[in-house]
Length: 331
Image (cartoon, rainbow, N blue to C red):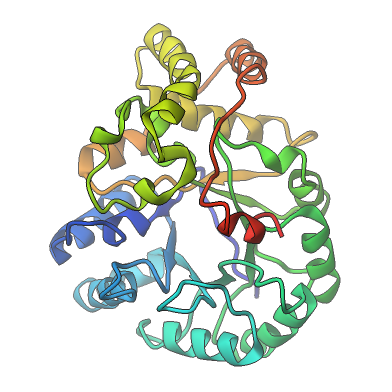
């Protein structure tokens, strides 16, 4: 039986460990417990979601969480990205790398099984057909419950589906800052095959909350300081029209800008004739921000249309990652 993500909102665990300041294990545990308390069942992790000196930190803390709260394991569907070199973070989808990644990740789970496994990127060397074929034995043995894809285009999804027509989901960056799923075929193919889209960075890496106006608002060592859209005050200022848009709507509704940005994503699910099902996975390290993200604020059809019209007039500046990393995106 193939595993699929469920719920209106999931929880991205990356920001808990891929950060300049180490997080206390209990704070990691508390964050998961808060999410479970709020009804979250889908959690997104990564084999490399840790600082340079401990890339496996996210998995280490998940392992410790399962030991401390064993009864909660059955309440969670956990997806883990893998197939990246832990030193360079370069994608590697060779058969050997896939086997190594699956076996390493599964060792952190109490039953030696991963709910969902996801190659973090296509490596531009091995075809998606090769990747799926290498993963199928792990499905057959029960070591992984499902296969997902990340940062691919519609054609790649279609090719993967022909090899394995039970793709659990496709993870893409999707927010008011990046809406490429409507141009690169991801939405249309996922809708056709009834594959959910998991939206990472649904708050534009925190930018759409309105809390970041200059580089000084980003801590030293934060991963965002190395990404194109955060590389200068000029770029941050150039994209601020998006923040003004969600802030305007938020003031009318009596909620936060971030809740409007997340509400905009969830609103797509009210139009299944046009859009695939989309599940945002905001990441938050603090309990107040986590509860804010998980509080569903709905938008009216008029508000949705207003946002869609205005966002079309905003040309977002800056690379999502770096110029070098762009070639691995939407591959």
